[in-house]
Length: 140
Image (spheres, rainbow, N blue to C red):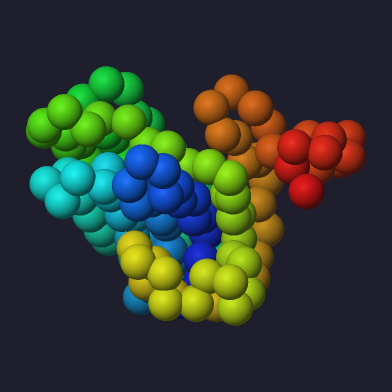
């Protein structure tokens, strides 16, 4: 479904930073803000096919001062400047929305929950959907 939240994670300590991914206008928008005012990355993945009923793969990869946003076979790479090259996304990570909790959050292009199917969701190397199935208390 168009106009929905895919992913949102934020931290407030020592400063606000976030990573957000939304579907709007049949495209994926990702924003990563490292919180120092100089390092905000915005990626518009204009494949215009993410609402076609087929499986798509979105990967956001952050290593050191490099960030790559990849949607299927299209990718955009960014270089993070300055001394703040870490994301502190604690304590909450939202996958597929968050209802009124995420309304008007910075970085999101939508406030609607995701309507669709998620085949796999990984954070670092952990399968979030597997951990939910196993009722791991870390992924409520």
